[in-house]
Image 1: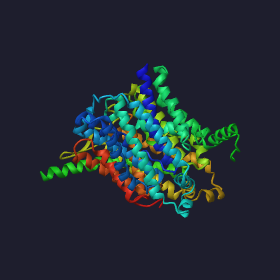
Image 2 (image 1 turned 60 degrees about the horizontal axis):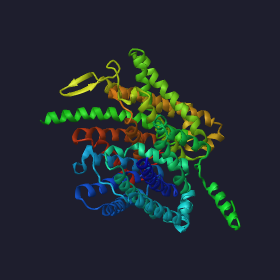
Image 3 (image 1 turned 90 degrees about the horizontal axis):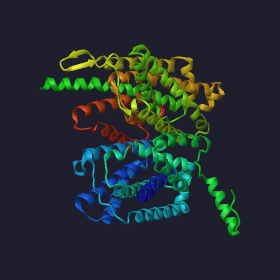
Image 4 (image 1 turned 30 degrees about the vertical axis):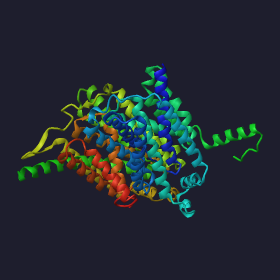
Length: 289
Length: 296
């Protein structure tokens, strides 16, 4: 039970990190799923370093971070100019390309993948520390000029251009950010499950991620945080007869939520109401809805 | 040796044209949904693959009755596409185009799960030899054109001609083009928008059903994960041409087919899909609006 719990917490953290990557790009109206291929790259780079070279885990995490940042920056330089659907399709294609490269690369075990990745005791601590740090950064980004610039380019692109917002570099920033935390998530994923195969990084993971983000609410950072544990809990804790249908459940839930609550369950209105409740409790003036 | 190389090239070209024709039908159906339906239907190829599964089920049940199988594929495709319309309608009404994409991802998830679990317990299905057109029709040297390839190339050209005739020579087609150009003016002119939208789903379903039959004939077998690859290829062709560009979409579907067929022949391993997708990433980066521009 303890191991199941640890695994559940690890996977939740990984999906939260990936979900924030989708969120921060959706904030400026982009559909960027490049953090899933970056997750594959991060996982394989870190696992290769630990298994084949024998360097310590912390160094592997650092190198995966650096490699993820570099590669996603280079990709973002090109992709940031594209429209939303172009980015979505290009990053989905990127997932296929990365999968094909991994499958054909003898260096990382090709079809058989990398096995016997040594575990490390402090991993949950590092993972959740990363979640808190990244969450803090996103919270701060949302409340500074950068976040308002993103908000503006989500609402109206022409308005954003008129106001002098450089949407290109904003896109490069948010895609690089998402890709980097995606690579970190992949690195933790590799150390959690201890065996990597190319078909781990398939379309199901991407569809599941999108379901988590859009059911929870893609307009606020809290949707991912609260709904990843609930939805991933369906997969981890309910009887296996129901859990076998999890993809179907995610799909149906996603459609129902999009129809009845377009912004997701935790939308901006709900956040404002909660904020005002907290302010009322503290005895401060409520902010207007 | 030179003769041999030429023949290999010829065989691959025929193969590429057959694949490209299937993509072309799907691209037209996708663009129709995009322009008239107002949705970004990622799951359209998934529904096509699903109607292939239904075609197979009917073939199994009726002891390989070819006519019934073809009818079942086309009908299933139309019915499934029409069934998605009520889901998209509220999103289309509030002009949430990004959300239609996310919703279609949900539909894709469900379709994949149905194919993975409910039909043939998730194993690949093989069409019976009476149905699949893998037998050779013409043989020149080592170049063989199978019945399936022949029917696919010519059938899809006929289907395209009928569709383009409908679009440019009939009253119905004029209504569609008016809606694609300016929805507001089309409404003012008295075109029943919702009814036309439902009709566009039905026509897209019809095209999907036709391509499902051809796909079954050229391939001979089908498995569920092919839907994701097919979906990406269709979107790649759409993006390559520029979204909503019907004629450009036809050309780019054949371009994708030829790239795929030739890389299948001359490159080792399973690099085909990677090359096609690498190509589209390059296009998206260099020309974000596609090769032929938007809505020409």
